[in-house]
Each structure stands twice: as structure tokens, then as C-alpha cells.
Image (cartoon, rainbow, N blue to C red; front, top):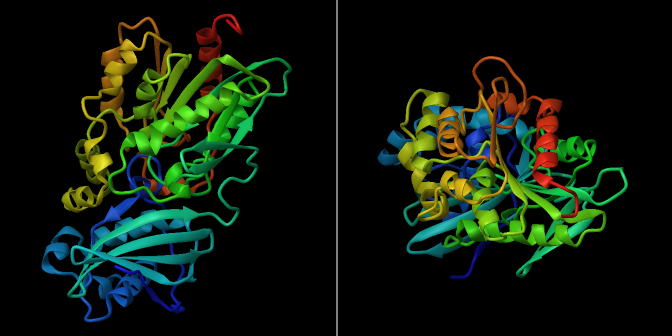
Length: 423
């Protein structure tokens, strides 16, 4: 069916406040917020547009009043407030609807996408509206920062019909350097894996370059082009990571025999799988790599954040099938063990997204492996930022840098895993 467009309209609202929702805007799990419902006897495109505006503007009483009974139970106002409060610091103040609302229809559901302008960039929201004016779903498609996709891009990865801007950072020291390809977690990430004011991949690139190690980081595919519902984790992660490895091998100043892969969060889960597809990858680094099902992980996260799992089923239903199913018959810890290549597993002791249960699984699987090194940092959170007490999403809205100890540990491991340069 032909897409419908509604002319832009300005909605004046208060500024957004609170701290970012790590489950949504960080790298551990999908960019899916939760299922919402909105009962308005309006044109479906107008419903989608109004719902996007009301959520962004935190007008929850009005929004909840439009819920059907099922969604009143699944997403009560306290849950909406918690998610909103954890989501907003990355975005800054809400300014306006930034363009047309475009709707497409399938099986009686209208999928309406509205661009929203915030002080820190533009957010695309997709709201599914039923024929009788009830909202059936609410999904964040991606955040576009004001500075663009990849400030400082000096390379590009071609993977199928998509070109991904990339940044190669080389150390100042002369001679071919080992290189680490950085692989993101879930979400439509930029090359720095920007989360609020923090840029973990930039930190890694700068810290490792100072220690003689090159890096290659790139814009994630689903930030450049939407992924179809049928997309697999190979489509989202593996294929582009392997293309990045191939690019790294042809990059001047890089030792093609010393290419490593570092995956963060979902990227850590995928790192053993990526290495299994390319026998020339020298070794892998797993940072906050999840090992359990989405249901298990979300259950722990919701209990940590809200003390309840009321929103579990609604959140699960909104997750793309690739996140619910992961890779069939794949256990990252088992694959890492049988790679017969160096493996470094790094874990933050205050990480509630990929928690100590995941680290215990890595430890159990790799305890007797001569190729494995495992390190746990008691004070670090999911982004490997230092802090005290119980980690909560509000931390991600506070600027920080990955501590030097992490870079030192990676550099020491790379030196040992490299053997003789060029061999």
C-alpha cells in the first residue's frame, strides 16, 4: 500500500529530563523501547504522529488514557516514566517534530515513522497503529547526531549494496602495527558507539593507539539503512565485521597477520562466531559479552531497574526475531573454547546488562583453556566506566573515559597473542 504523509506540525513541549535507558540506547539489547497502545479516533498517521509527540514530551497521563486494557497492564504509567527518564539525557531537550509522518500498512496495522528533533540530534520513532486507532507498538529506529554519521571518517567498508563510513586510527610509531576491529553491541550505533556523552570506541581507539595498536571502527549497518524484519545476526553484525577485517588487512601501516576482533556486548557475543568464519583472525577480545538468552537477560535487567518484570512480555514481543532467537545452536563460550586462538574476556563488575552470570559462564567454559585470559574489573559498568555503588542507566549520561588499566591489559594481551610480528 502506498505510504501516507502528513504535513509537518510543530508541537511545543517541555524539555526532556532524566537518564538514558541502557537497555534501549546502549549496546546490550535492541533499540526497542516497549509496546504501547493509544486509543484515538483519528487518522492513523495522525495517531502515530501524536503518540510520538506525547511520548517525547513525557505527557504520560494523556498517553495512558488512550491505552487498551492489555497495554494498561503491560505498560502502566510508572513503567513509561522510568523508561522515559532513562532514555532522555542522550537526546537533550525535545524541540519539535522534524518532518513528515510516513505510514505503510500490512495486515491491518499501519506502521508510522515520525522524525523528532532534539538538542543532541534527530530520533526516528516508529509507531504501529491498528485500524481502530490503537497503537500496537513503539520502536526507536535510530538516533542521528548533529555531527553526522562518522566524524573523522577516513575509510569505508563496502558490504553488499551498503557503504559504511569507517575510521582507521594508527599509532605514531613507525612499522606495521597490529590492528583491532571494533564490533558494536545492539542498536544503530555510530563509529564511536556513542552513548550519551560517552564514546567507548573512541576511547579504545585513542588509548590503544598510544600503546602501539591500530584500530578500525565503523558505522553500524542499521544506522545507515533499516534492516528488514527477516534479517539475521549475520546480516546485522557478522558480514560487516568480516568486511572490516578484510579492509584492515589492506590498510597501509597495518600488519595483516595481526588482525584481532574486539566485540562489545552483542559484539562480544558474536566475536567467537566472527572468528570462526575467518581462520586468519589472530584472536578475539570480548568486552561485556552476553552469553544468555534475551529473555534471561531482560528479566535480570527489568528486576534491577524496576523491581518487577511486568514489561517483559511486551518488550520481548517488540524485539526483532534475531534478538529473540540469537544464533541457532550457537554458544559463544563453547565456540571461543574450540577456536584454538587467543581469547581475552573483559567484564565490568558493576555491569547489570551483561552481569556476573554471563561472566561465570565465560569463566566456566574457558577455565582450562591455555588460550584464554579473563579479567573482571569490580568498579566498571557496562560501558567500562568507573563508578561506585549500584550501576543504573543515569550513569551513562555522565561523561567518563575508559580507564588506562583496560588499555594496558589489552595491549599486554595483544603483545602476547601476536607472537613474532609479521609471522
